[in-house]
Length: 366
Image 1 (tube, rainbow, N blue to C red):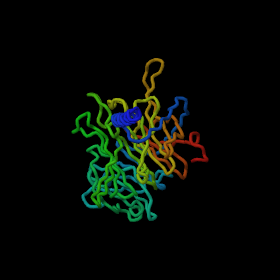
Image 2: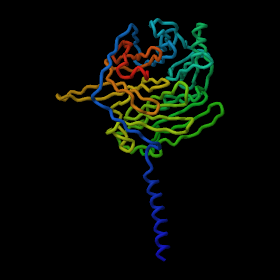
Image 3: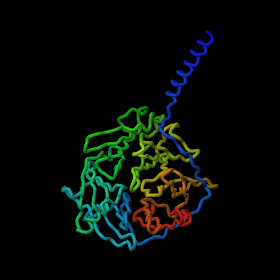
Image 4: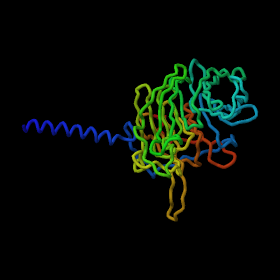
């Protein structure tokens, strides 16, 4: 009788533990790595260059030696520059309704790649079509060559997406915090969509939404997304929280890195007043370059804002941490010349700066 009683107790304890575990299921489904953001760090100074743009909504991509800038003008939406001498080489993506033309809203995406010895860019046209642009052929022929077109989600509906296998028909999508949802049900939803085969697979990244109140924003997991140039590795910045989310699509897994001591997904959703990671970062085959904003209060109570460059490897390890002077975004990294470029935050015309990162990334690993 005692043996039966003990066995019954163990069974009931196991059931209770399972129920408790289900109730305490985490807000983020994967492992989270903590890292310290040290205050004692060096400053990297930018050297202003002879390239200015007036569009505050600019987006930049650097592939091979071409610096591509989204800057709407009479002839088109994209300016192509030689990064070595900053001469303008072409204006692409003219306005119009044909396949090789584009209309507002237009978005240059962060994903660029090389295949079949050609350079390709990706962009969104009319907020509903993803277009692949063959930059190499466009430069050779003097006209914009669109090599492929696919349906895509709308950026205006809080979607962020890039392409698996560098194929615009295979989309890794995050839709965050729809306003139509009740606050307690708002959540970030991730999925893999094949537009050609009409297939969709949901990823359970956030089993439960963050707790929220009347001041909480819906897009707590919203932020820019970037893809490894050759592998199906993605990283997403959380604009309003100190998280970077890493996804390995081929391995079907993910993890996050988080600044130790800052609010977590298990706290209340933020109010959106403070941006932590700025859009306009960049990635290479070895590194993730992220722009982090840190607010400081001096002894006189004056608030200042630092913009730091945080460099991670694709395993989420923090490699470098440096203050940028001046602060910049829309950064790009020239792997051949080991040089970082970025546009400053000045009002009006924004100036391209060149940053020496030799002090923060050892030459043996650059």
